[in-house]
Image (cartoon, rainbow, N blue to C red):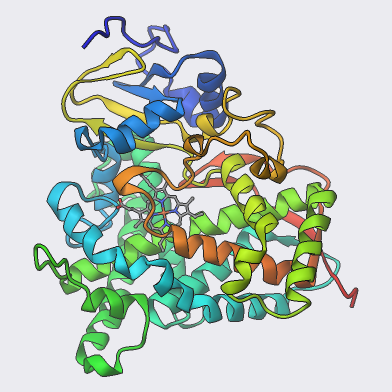
Length: 452
Ligand code: HEM
């Protein structure tokens, strides 16, 4: 090992909180500042914890892929996330062998061939949503996409419509994911144990019991059915799945945790990406026109199929550009096990690593005019796919990517065949929540294409 100098520190103030106030108030500005004004590795201090921020594609791939054995999922956030679990672990929060057994079991469940079977559900739910949309009125696209992706994940996972059949479950999911995020990032919440009967703790516990009761009923009812009567959904596939090498299968509690994890990881991410895509289309009529022309040429007014997607390259470019410009997972974290070296800097053992996905997606060395929404960049030679980390990289890369891509492409195709959008008076402001969201929703003027 040749590394000597510590990575630069962003903030030299003696305050005990360090960069924490900045991170809480202006996280995206800070992530961009790290990309534009610091090197590939920077140290920031979030309260008592020093974080090693990686803002370079090569360094990120080193942590997530090349030397991934030296990095575990960072403990503090995962500890809080585990509060929402019954069995104590799911695919997202586990590490080591328990993670490997789950990943091997789940990989075939999320294979492209399998998720392509959900095409009908996606198209039907999109049509149901569009039938209800008014003509010539302002619409919150973020809320609409949250609803439609929740309906899709509910039907493809449980063969049930969560919005219609279990509205209380929908609210409970947002309460729990909001609580987990706030507890992980707010010192006062972190220091308040769960047994203290504060309104927030009580609301969290109530939401958790709604989720456990509802999912528990679904899993138990499914277990009582003979296998040949199981509907062809993700739950049936997970129940039937096993890891060939270890023989691992999922217990009822573990199944419930996986279902919970999939809704949490898979619904808001796709929804916010879609809402930012429509937001950008409304602000770039020339991009919208090119995309609509492609859809009209290939589909000629009929509903899209999975096979159509290969003939819609500009649609893929628009989705990729949205994922670059608005990566729903704007950062991810790891913890080093032993020492390491990145870009010539020493990384100590047990260091908290922050992979600055947002900063890497806006790095001027990798992207020309990174602040511009420019789907055409994906057809030019300039692209370095290593600098695109929307779905992560390495062994823990997003398992839901095939489903997310199918869902985003089909929904966009269905929507644009019937509606066009124009921007609201004022732009939407980005905020960092569990994902990259808009402060007050993504409001756009929606007009039917046939003008009715
Ligand atoms: C636009 C949509 C999505 C984005 C941007 C996204 C992003 C990501 C990223 C960046 C990771 C890696 C996190 C890390 O390395 O720490 C990840 C992991 C994961 N994602 Fe997604 N995701 C999306 C959709 C989905 C969907 C639809 C599902 C499931 C239905 C899903 C399930 C998961 C799971 C279970 C993991 C953990 C995998 C593991 O640790 O082995 N995601 N996602």
